[in-house]
Image (cartoon, rainbow, N blue to C red; front, side, top):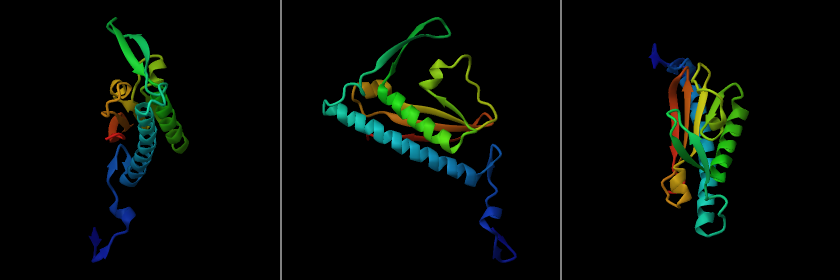
Amino acid sequence: AQSGGRTAPLAARNKFHVGGMASAELAGYLESAKEVALEAGRMIREAHEARERGESEALSHGNVKDNQTFAGERQVDLVTATDKACEDHIISTLKQRYPAHVFIGEESSATAQGPLILGAAPTWIIDPLDGTTNFVHGYPLVTVSIGLAVQGELVLGVIYNPIL
């Protein structure tokens, strides 16, 4: 943007806001999300490759959780050591950077009491290994999925397939 033939300072030009946040702040969150997605992706890729070499059954075979859904039906959910390790890494890294933020992880939220509600606080929504069934069977269609909601509205997301 120009004012009287001069270029306005970046801070003055950068007035895009989402959920009360400036785009520069969101860009920082996006970089953090990309960084931890790549790190978790490395963990998934290493576990996948170890499984292919026959070196690590513990990381690739799921544990079955038998849950009852709200309709009273039974559901089976595969959870692997890799799921948990990736979620722990993502949440601990982001929590260290953003201690006032809220975190909803697929694995850790399974133990939450009551419904999960998106409030006004920035809330990270994390599926550390989306496609666990594919992962357990050695198929490469898996992703790390990380989103950020602010004031109940999704403002950014990162989806990364570390195997393809």
